[in-house]
Picture 1 (tube, each protein chain N blue to C red):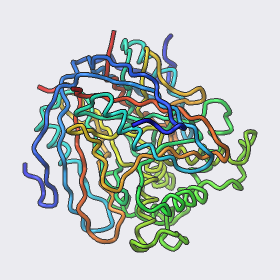
Picture 2: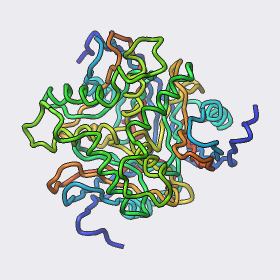
Picture 3: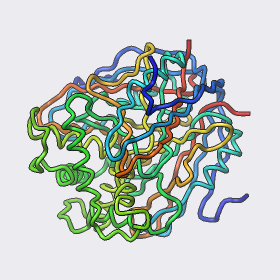
Length: 157
Length: 157
Length: 157
C-alpha cells in the first residue's frame, strides 16, 4: 500500500543494537527558569561513541521537568514561563502548601511538561531540528541540585 | 510478593534485541489541525520486519507536536483544538510575536503535548488500543512541511 | 570541551543490549483518581531479571493516562486532580458529549499528561527519585478496566 502524497519516507537505515551506555548528570539550577542541556547531551553522545539509536533523559524530581523548545529568541522562554504560571498559579487554593506556595504549582507544571525526553541519533548526530534545544525547567523559585539520568541505547563505534 | 487483586500481569515474552531501524518521514500539513499518522507508522513497522520492541516518533519542530488520541468521533479532534486554543490563546500578551500571533501559542501547545511518542510492538503488531491513533498536530495556521524521525528498536525477522 | 561548572557527569556504565521483555498489565480502577503502579513495576523489573536499560509503560486508552508524581503527601494527588479539572472542565461547551460529560475532559487530560513513561534501570534498580511514583490516572468517573503494556529493553542477567 502506498503512502498518501502528503507523506514521504526515506529508505531504511538498519544497524545492530549493541549497547546501553548510562550516566548521571547533575545540574545546579539558579532558581526558576530554563537550563539549556543541549551541548552537554551532545558531549555525552560523542563520548559514548553513539552512532545510531536513541538517547533518553530522565529527571529524578517532581518539581523540575524537561522540555524541547525553541533555542533562538530568549523571549520564547520568558513567555513559556508566563504560560506555565498562568496554567498553575500560586494563588489557586492548593491544599498542599507545607513546602511553600511555589511547590504545588511546580508539581502541576511538571505534570504538564515531562520527566523524560527521547532524541534519536543518526550518523552520530542528535536528530534535533534547527530550532530545537533540550531544557531542564526549574519550577521552584530557589536554586536546586537536580539529577538527570542519561542513557543511550543503540549502535556504538 | 503478590500483586493486589486489582492488578494482573500476563506471562513474559522475551526476545533478542537485534536491530535499530531508522527512517525520516516528511509530512506536508494543510494548516492547523490533526494529521493521522497511524497507517503510515503501521507500514513502517511492517516494512522494517519489526516483531517485538518499540517504535519511536520524534518531531523535529517546536510549533507542531505529536499526540495519541481518539480515532472514532471527529468532534473529539475539534474539541481538542478548542481546548488547546483556550490553554494557549493568541491574545495573551506574549512578548514573542515576530513570527505572527499564532507562533507563541504554537510553542505553548507543543510544550503541553509532546515531541516524541513510543508505541510497543508485540507479535508484529502496534499495541495501540482500539480507539487510539497517532497524530501530528499542526499548531500554525498555514501549511508547513514537517519532519518526523521514525525508529524501531527490538527484534526483527 | 569541558562542561560548565554547574553541570557534572558521572563515568559511563556500558553493557550489552541483550533482550526485550514484554508483558501486559491489567488494572481495575475504582473511578476518577490516581493508582500507584510503582510496586508492580518494580516486581516486573525484578522478575524480568533487568540489570540495565529502560522500562516503558504504555497505556492503551484515551481517557486514562500516566504520570510520574510525588508519592509522599496525598494532598498533592488531590490538588493535581483539581488542577486537571480546572484545565479541562466538564462545563466547557464540548461538542463531543455522547459518552457523558466526563468523556471529553478525560481526552483533554490524557493529552496534557502522557500515554507512555520511560524509566531507566541501573544496577537492577528503577532510577526513580526519592519522591517519585508512577501513577495511572483514571479520568472517567466510573471504574474501568485498563491495559498497560510493560516492556523492558536492555541487559538482563
